[in-house]
Figure (cartoon, rainbow, N blue to C red):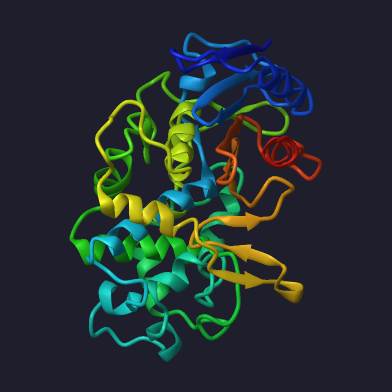
Length: 356
């Protein structure tokens, strides 16, 4: 059950792109699948999947992004820095709990360390697992609220000296969210809306489930439906929900093109933030082969560098990526939990890297 739609009213979608998306979709097994491509602002969207489509088109449903939420957190931090409200080098503990006694390594952790996975913190707090394991496949995060995330950070003993090693950490990015909320006196959800979602016109992007029928339903590997994700205190690391069309708008903003809905220039602090998050920042791995920006994975391709981030929840997957040199953006969503032989990320990544 598939459909291909050109979603920019004034320009027809590319037939070649439509064929490419239809071919790619055959490699992915999911109840619902959306593959959305923008080439210099011309959008083509392929929807399909093994389930019967519902009353709301798949590209208009809110999808859980999981870790693909992190580029939103990165852009928010970069904009606050551009506004002079915080600095990348600000120490998180000083903003989150001024004067509170913490381990010397925790005292050295900066906002940049938290976002770039170089803080020395583990992927999740050690005391997260006892409460999560009994409900690992249903609700592992909902029982670990924001105050526990903050307390776990303030009593942490980082594994490595901040800034010396890269270790992917949902814990660290969640702490970043709470720190920015404390530094600005604004709840994370409100801050994200004010600084990122509203300025970019992302009207169908949120950090909580929408009204009934507005969100895609995730599924386990066996096809059973999964309840909407509750991220507990880990909101900044994985709570964003967005329609595939909003995701294309988000990616197109990073490509530097004007907003076709608003001819006025963007706020200079937002433009500066969009530029900042695309700049290569650090290297890691064997022979420092892996490059990262403030918030995106950064890979070479035959057509120029690609920037991307993937994410998964208990029953959904998402992929966001763009190629600045050629004006290509790819947003993909699927409503089945990831598994070892899953082809979703490889398929979406191929759309970004294997075509001119």
